[in-house]
Length: 369
Image 1 (cartoon, one colour):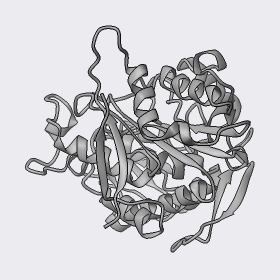
Image 2 (image 1 turned 180 degrees about the vertical axis):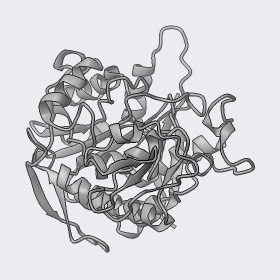
Image 3 (image 1 turned 135 degrees about the vertical axis):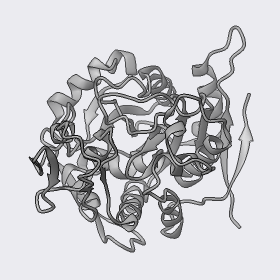
């Protein structure tokens, strides 16, 4: 069976060393310097974090990557696309302000910042998906498709709909325009368990489609208005909102993998997973729960599937942190992300990505000091 190489370094540093130096070394060992960056535009796809969330990647990591690209005569820029839901990143002006609030600016990041799908999230390119089984085309932010090289710099974490978020999610969901995100999300519509709903109305604050109304202090979701983005699921502290069919999440994972294929196909791509502050939910939330495992390390590979597989294996080998959400979820479940998000089979994300030729789940881990 084909194996992809994934390079790993842990978070331990001796005096005189730093995590940023270690990131540089793991990139070098993984072959980053062999990419021909000479005068080429290199998109560094990152998640700037929703203001209020403190688990997103610090800009220092991005600057390390950007500085290396510039040393190789490349032209890097940081990018992300607009969101579907209520928040500070649904159009480019708010998105850029949110990024700056979280410490991202051209000086701290070492390169320009460009929102990938334009001012209102409508500037996209329809891309034919090679080997697509569910979708034939993907709507990807034009700026991202204009780049010659794509680098995914990923904060590895949990996710309420996809199980986890790493390279595949950062590329697939993150590079889709607002219309592209709608295509990925629109199969599964959440429902409310009225016996568990406490009528706090927090879910409605996160619904950009105004699909949630209240009757007798209980939430109801209008499936015709609902975009299926899942923000209400993550916002519900009483676990009253869920998807009625597991297959809806699996279908989302598969479509997301096909979008990631559209982003990577036909050009150089490289992927870095930073496995620290592993929050149970996406950095799209304006808050973050306690980390579920200790900070584990940094993974790098030319294969986005393998780098995600290596990261999730490392998380599942780690000891869960006492006092985190894992203590409240299904006891006896060894798989950490299944324990946190039992409605989602995260493996469908990796299996389908492999099936369509994005990469390989099988990997060989190479340790870098």
